[in-house]
Amino acid sequence: MDFISIYSQQIARHINGMLSVEEIAEMMEEPKLTQHGDLAFPCFQLAKHMKQSPNEIAKWLAEKIKSPSIAKVEAIGPYMNCFMNKKRASKQILRTIYHQKQAYGTHQFGEGKTITIDFSSPNIAKPFSMGHLRSTVIGNAIALIAEKCGYQTVRINHLGDWGTQFGKLIVAYERWGDEKTVKANPIQALFALYVLFHEKAEKHPILNEEARACFKKLEDGDGEATQLWTWFRKESLKEFTKIYELLGVTFDAYTGEAFYNDKMQDVISMLQERDLLVRSDGADVVNLEEADLPPCLIRKSDGATLYATRDITAALYRQVHYQFDKAIYVVGQEQAIHFQQVFLVLQKLGFDWAGNMVHVPFGFMLKDGKKMSTRKGKVVLLEEVLAEAVKLAEQNIEEKNPALGNKADVAKKVGIGAVIFHDLKHDRQNSVAFNLEEMLQFEGATGPYVQYTHARACAILRKAPVSQDMVEGLDDEFSWPVIKKLHHFPEIVMASLHSYEPSKIARFLLELSQEFNRYYGKVKILHDDPHLHDRLVLVACSATVLKEGLRLLGIHAPEEM
RNA sequence: GUCCCAGUAGCUCAGCUGGAUAGAGCAACAGCCUUCUAAGCUGUGGGUCGCAGGUUCGAAUCCUGCCUGGGACGCCA
Image (tube, rainbow, N blue to C red):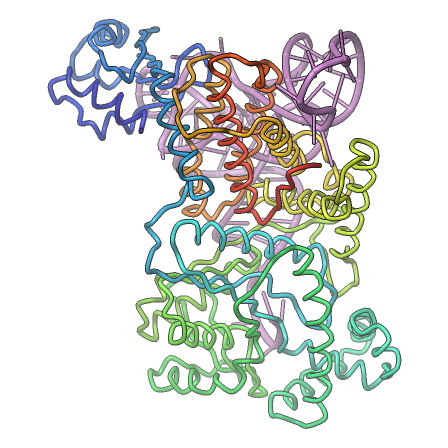
């Protein structure tokens, strides 16, 4: 049941091949105003071919079109507005959804293919800040959407557990830290040391060199440094796991940067064999001038490796290990050049699959108009924000539905859903200004609004469950906007994956909720008349799509709230 | 200096593969719960779509230049 092809085919029949069905479909528009029908075909192009005014053509052609699927075609100016046969269309749409249930919107084009998704990837020994929320929820949603499209996904948490920062941390710990403080409150203590290091290093730059030397020691397998590193990493993971559980995010691998420490030599040798490695100011780089990119640093002058070295190594490992058809990196936009460099170096090494790697950038979480800086200690902790959201949800429940059974569970789903949805409803490229008040808003265009709509639908179905599978279809003007929205879900899922934009689903859910709530306000669903059953099917289908859409964003849909 | 992203209602944002009268939410104001969950619905007010050119029958949307904000640009990640 594809409105556009039905209408396009009808038009093509009467225009003597001046335009192909595909060309017609391409021009088809969805009118902004409901009184303009379900589809609009502008006649400007035809006017050129037929050497008549578009208005005349619209008038003439509108009268020719006859199809059981189309109720009427109306010429308004140069437009031919098509009104679908609501009864017939809704019958098919509702049947499909009611029959497929949560499988509605599933695609097969990804079957047999694997996508690796590198996301979240927080730095060890630092608290999980609001800044990490974006990568985590966007990556998680993309993984869920990809799975809905048939792909097998490998979710990789490329932990920032290696690099000069550990040199800094170890130096700071040895100078100013003590075991007791760190043991008592690991992340906080380590983070304090990290911030302290940056403060001191500003006055005494020599500390930076000390840190670099210390990281080199770590890379070379120095016992004491390795012991500290192992400890720091373990404590951090414990902390992160708590957050991931709260958010409901899972990973298939926690292979961080350190994992590739003993695998990088192969890459360096490969680059040397192909004469790609060049000495420059004492460091080893790959020149990328031909692509107008700055050189990619592979090895520092002290011989230690860099971020790019590890990412290249990781890509090779992943290709061998997972044989990905596509590799996605959900990492902030400030790293765009880095990924261009990494992908290009892999291409220069002769790996064709480097063309299947894509950086999915996103905007910053801003605080006071600026990027949050971990180095200066200016962070907002995600854990605190989540706790605040859950608390607020609890208050809301107490106020609005005190009789609710499992309050704590629902509060968690609603509070956390609000935070995730707030992040995902924006275009991923846009920066998001951190605004706690806005994030904890439960009314209007929010996650709880969608959840509430779902809960409302569920409440009706509890009172009057759908009793049989037959669907006759609805032809009233109130249900039609809801049915049309439901019909769009599969294409939204696909578009959302192709553009790596979970926000498309988030906005779709808001629109669907709005249409459903309008319907709910205008029509007494449980009214006992011959259409009761079909209305209940519509409610059931709406609930299914709302729940499934939220699931794709990593958000729960409680049945009561 | 070069490159990337953004600039649309008081605020937060959709719309951007060109098409009819530029849409939501928040905030403000006015209504709607003896009837399916008011975390909802209905209505009112609010816009030189950053600026200036250009392409086109038609530009918020495409092109060029400029302005503003954010970011990136070899030994951090």
